[in-house]
Image 1: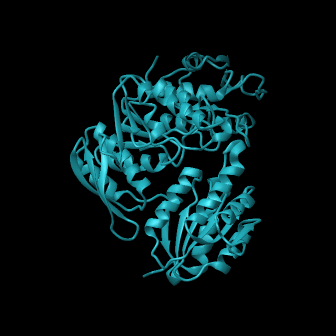
Image 2: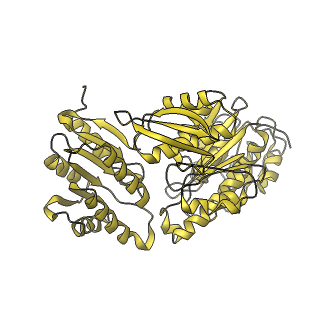
Image 3: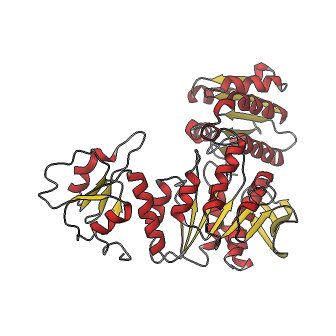
Length: 475
């Protein structure tokens, strides 16, 4: 097999993905691969993916008109009549999604760098970004963009790796059994990290034990020559240690971990200072994020750097230079002394608990807590109960006003009332505009406002409306 794009032939591609070439010369060299007909480069091959809202098979002619040298399609696809006379390559394969993964695995083997894979119920993206912030100080590091963490995003990230990239830090997500196993097979990581295991994606996994089993797929598939980095403080993650026969490094806050944090202090504006111990060697660090969960994310990032033999100076520098991500507990000071916290990227029971705990750490004694809560997605048959529990938890934290949005908004408010909130302090919003109006009517000067919900609820629009209405403080 030739080692790179521009040399690999159509016939070799067909063999690699278990496909059949039905048109074009088998000896045509292909310059690369694209799944987007709008951005494909001349001489590349177009792979037609099927999604929930789109089907790449509808854009074959668009891809060819943009310069594609051929297409990879599933059986039964109607091929435009002019493809064969033009000598265009057409390869059929049972599943173009599987083919994408197979091509990414091939490219992973050709690429000569080290790959780090990160999974877990919460903290994946922040840990990935923190690790990349450290590693990029020493090596040219590629990180998966946004949350490109599924069976499409991860292979595309691997296929984008260039020779100059020496390290890759990739995120692995899932919502069904077998997904992490396939992602691990494709990525073949040198280091695999599990942040934690919690109640998330229960709709596709059934129960918490299903989540444990799914996250454990990383360790089952990963090579014993690789290194596993596991959260030693998380009981469910710690249970996975015996599953892996290779070297294991644990991280967390407790002293039993090889990489741990201690002496944690708030230093103003949501920042924290603490010491990281790398096999008992002390490293003083600072991060621009509040919350004990973010300390743990930082320790996970440091554990990756430690495993790759980066200096303690680079670890401290990389963490201090890390910039908080949009939608992940971003604190903004508004006029009138109001603080709005944008934690709108993800929501499940454990991430809500982490957010509320962090609010308590930040909140001054005289500050009222106001919460705008969106739905927690993919919680399966127990979703109603988890939303009632969420309302109770918000009430327990002393919230003075709560507005809920989404299919389970009624359950959230019911839980809050069971937890002691007066119903007059609550509201179920029918839409974003109603939530915004409710907040405008009830937020007072010096309040701390937490906006929390799953990404699909799009509460970031409410955050922006709050910023626009009150104005961002310049003081």
